Length: 424
Ligand SMILES: CC(=O)N[C@H]1[C@@H](OP(=O)(O)OP(=O)(O)OC[C@H]2O[C@@H](n3ccc(=O)[nH]c3=O)[C@H](O)[C@@H]2O)O[C@H](CO)[C@@H](O)[C@@H]1O
Ligand SMILES: C=C(OP(=O)(O)O)C(=O)O
Image 1 (tube, rainbow, N blue to C red):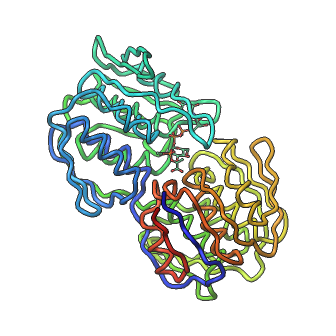
Image 2: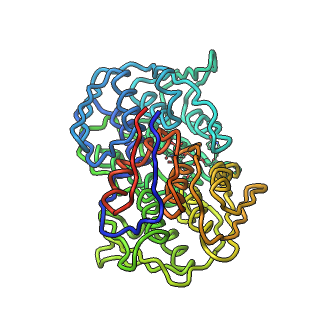
């Protein structure tokens, strides 16, 4: 199990490129199952989650070739059973349900299991798929799905108690593209990754309108064809490096290339509210972050897009841990997603978590301690904390961060951080 040793207190400077979005790549790789023809996907980040998805596609019988960021998939001959050994490693593997049902009329996929960020049921995925003609049997931890009368259009409201579902919207959209008739998804997720998937499907010949709003309309077609697609920039990786800039950059700041300004609005607003400087180029594709001279705390409430993303709250906890004043972070989407706080407290942070809300009183400095990463964004928060902490922080269970940050250690080294990965 690799660990990262971060020697805190070194100012960041210079620039790095942001990778393609993990959370767009995963459903788009699964959507390649929808055609017999070749699909080329560019800027797929080299992270363990995309590698798991590629292994799942291969296990389903697809031919997959990866050459740095470009993945070619040919799914001419596929089977309907996604192996438990792979599915259990990554929740997003449930994205293969929709495409398998659409292509083969059946699917067997394991239930994805628990997750440290909180309750992650699949009831809304199943609600959507049932509404368009899927029958589901649960046995031995598997979801056995069939479509005795084929898939047909329907009107489905996918709102759950914590708002819309991103992958649930993706799954239904991917199943409905080849269904007979029109499917209307109400309370659809509007995240940029859903829009990227819709654009990918449209480029394969699907008829979809409304992606990016709360109502998506899908008119089923007979067949989809091959395509080429470039994944959108990872707004969560970009946001994480923006926070790194606010916490640890020198007075020239750091610059991130290959970003999408439009996707970074809530993160940008909070950094500015907290007293930092954020400047995009005219095209909105590069951004420079300069730490403010008088940073202050702020209040964050996570919400579905275009609200503040839950995937960025842990990183802002690190920023606020060393920002004067009291900050409050409430996660309405995953109220139990605060595992990073206990580890940050071990580094001297003053954080109290209660009922889905963290109250953070900024301290002057954190100090190094051995800490344990518990999930993807929690590990990013620990790396950010370690960048400014006094001494050398040892971050264990690095595989969490490798799920979703492409070569994070190399990118931080490029920016002048002092750290090393210890392979064990
Ligand atoms: C691979 C990927 O893209 N992951 C993202 C995706 O996860 P994912 O799509 O799994 O998350 P959802 O949008 O589905 O979850 C939103 C809320 O709905 C609930 N829910 C979800 C499905 C369901 O069937 N029933 C139900 O109640 C969840 O428990 C949660 O409270 O969106 C999350 C919310 O932006 C992000 O944190 C994840 O990084
Ligand atoms: C929670 C995340 O991913 P996943 O939904 O795959 O667990 C994330 O990207 O922050």
